[in-house]
Image (cartoon, rainbow, N blue to C red; front, side, top):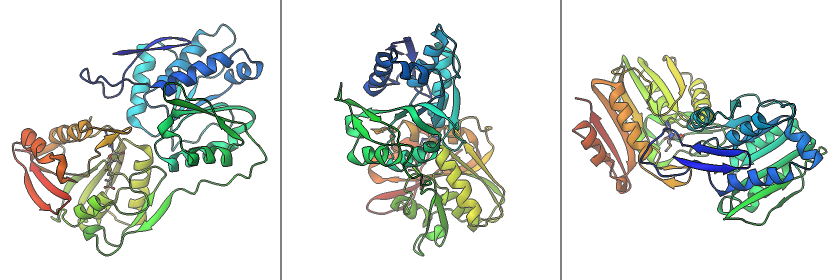
Length: 394
Ligand code: SAM
């Protein structure tokens, strides 16, 4: 476990799920830079007063910022303001934050998802710039009405994550914006709120209609909240999957694992009126999108929607079929850890004879993993780029 040294204490931080072999840190130089900056400015009257009000942290990856701010509040000699509020799209990030707060006895924080109603007044707004510009715009637009002339607004990110388009968003939605010098490849963003700026609503969610050449997904209307995978058009891997999905008649219980906007599970439900579908994803934006996509297409099948880490927590043997287009990167890093977790938790959740069907880039070599875990793996379909694979729990 790695220890983060902050102005308000040293904190042992981990990612979620915890993996002792995982040497990746749960924070980076942009978190350190932001915390140092706040500590340096704490002596300024305006900043001290703001820090005693409602402090909101958007996009904290694994809870490093929230843990430090909760510890600051716990340690403060004067009257403590409300606990810091974290707004996150990621269930994994929220679970990590809970564990990091508890392990370090840092004190309380209020954890909200990106779909929850944000606080109606924000005195300090700290933004860890997300990978998705759309998600940043959506969150800034949702929070702008709560920002007032004295709100301290600071963004942070690694230099490679902060683009002109990122700064334009702060400028258009919050007010005049400048950046700090880079330190250890991280940069801060300072925005001065301009209450006279016109308040436009978030342009999200956005909807598109799938064309006729997409197998079981043909003609579906897909609803996408900001930041979901392939929000503007059908992914080519998903398209290939929808052309090669199982078409058996129910009744059975299926899962759309890593559902994103829910197009795969909705296509399955439309083709199998007796199938019951669980849509699961670690992103709150994704699960909300899947729910909206499902409702929009009028399928009458029973459906459930869950924010979860793969199929962790699902009763063993309770599922007949799992469908997935697994992710192959997480927070910018290429990794097959998530796919592996999806395959292992699916195996546990499947009944004997139940099936996992996946689509993946041919070069990812998922068939080797599935063979190792399930003892079998069949190629259902393949083209130059993608394969659809099927593994049976025996
Ligand atoms: N099924 C959708 C499609 O085909 O358009 C989305 C596929 S996208 C390649 C992978 C999805 O897996 C993303 O929506 C991502 O949020 C989700 N995901 C990543 N890690 C996860 C985890 N640990 N548990 C559940 N879902 C996860």
